[in-house]
Image 1 (spheres, rainbow, N blue to C red):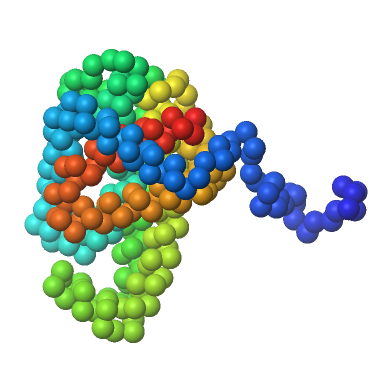
Image 2 (image 1 turned 120 degrees about the horizontal axis):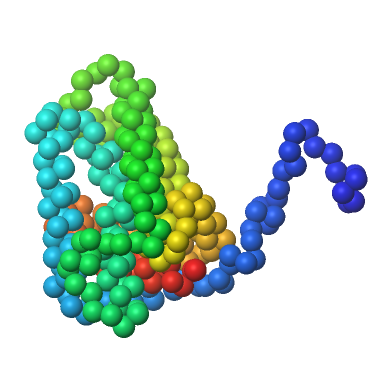
Length: 268
């Protein structure tokens, strides 16, 4: 069909799936590449391991403090959305781990001070990106509260002891779980795509936040096979950390942080 024969009912021309793909962004990596990133992250952890463990311990302490504040202030009704939304802002917290991996790659000697006081090449653009990710997390948490109200109306939150029974033993609870999983999955996919490479990129290059986030999304979209595998690994390890009361963060968070840097380097 010639270009002149095409007719559209829209103001702008629509694109097929293939047309949204950019060969310049495709790296043709197999799903196994995600395991290679994890192995490279583990190797970085073993170099001056105390730095990574201390960093992971600090992240665990911050996480435990925030969760305690939610429960102590009577806001336990947003506890589970907050835990799920934590993954949205995690790449910002991992910037010190990216810095350690970057320094090791360059043949340098990272220190705890350089990991805690990072000087990204993009400057304050990292702060702007973190702010956008925090806003996205707040939108997700508000959406989760609205979903609860949609299915259970003005019924008071039954507390952490009662919510499990409400969700898994009632038809309305199952319906909310299904819809909430779908909505949360959309938030998670978008947050993963815009953040997975944007923070490492802002550390590594002089660019702006929106360009970094758009580039990150483009890299994910054009490399779905390894990125699906990497997303599954991140989710599995995050759930494992949550099961341990987030004590697992002390080792798992640094491992994922270092591995994410190697994912970025493989995709850039």
